[in-house]
Image (tube, rainbow, N blue to C red; front, side):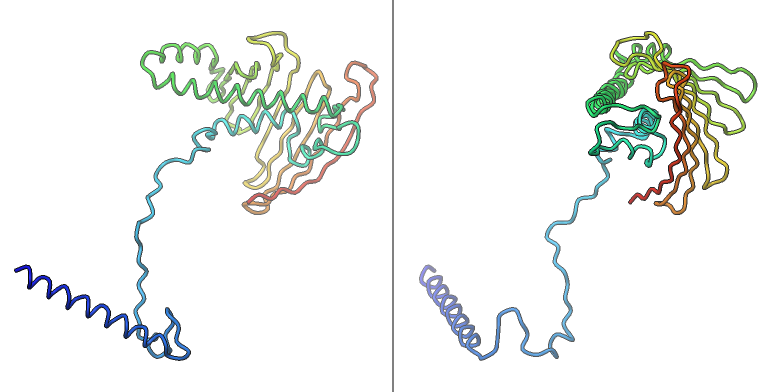
Amino acid sequence: MSIRLLILAIIVLAQGFNAQGQERLVAKVVGEHWGYLPSLAEERNMDVVEMVLIDNPARESVPLNLIIFDSQLSREFRDRYQLKFGQTEAEQNLSAPNQFYTYEHAQGVRVTPQEDVQRKRAYGEYMVRRLTEHHVDQYAQASPNLRPVYELKERVSNVNLEVRKGYKVRLHYSLSGNYIDVKMENPLDVATKVTLQMDESSFGPSSVNETILAIGYPLTQSVSVGTHYKINAKAFSLAGYKSLRPNLSTSLTGSTAAVDPSREDSPRDDRVIIGFTWSQ
């Protein structure tokens, strides 16, 4: 039996060497290259099938950025940024770094570059606190042991009052930003909000540093208006928005503010800003 296996192995090896020898002879044909056909006629009737070794895994999980920054947080961060640096992107760009010594914020407040950095750092610190608070709340809400603590925090932070049919007042206290939002809901679709801003560096309610009144109303499906009025800063702005395309919009903003809010006879800083916003 072993002799037959040996003879069979010799025959197989001999055929392999013979095939390699034939391949070497064919390779010596002038103008022929491995991987290329000598004639297009053979390629016309060839059925090429892509060979997939491993299928792409199905992506059913939610992207990480949507888990960290959900729609609620994104809306809060956008609203807070607009209160600090301007309603529209055109206003916000006015406070971008430049070669001048002072910055002219859209609210009429002039600050030095160091003060501008401090303001933006304070906003970044608020974002970190708010992110931490939000995800701790999510964890406590899902935990049976911590859920009573979460529910107590929600009852203290949120108060809802129904003044009359169709009219509601919602009070929300933000532990991270140390401010109180008072929203008035009405059947006229007029967005009305009063913000009582306290010292952000202190923990817990303190004296009110600024009171901000914001009103917004959609005139049509593509046109809306919004106003901001800061009582202590004596600053008022009115902005109109027009959606041109799903990723293109324009805005017209008029603002006025006291140069020195501490003086009753302070001169006013008036301006009109036209801006275009394009997003991918």
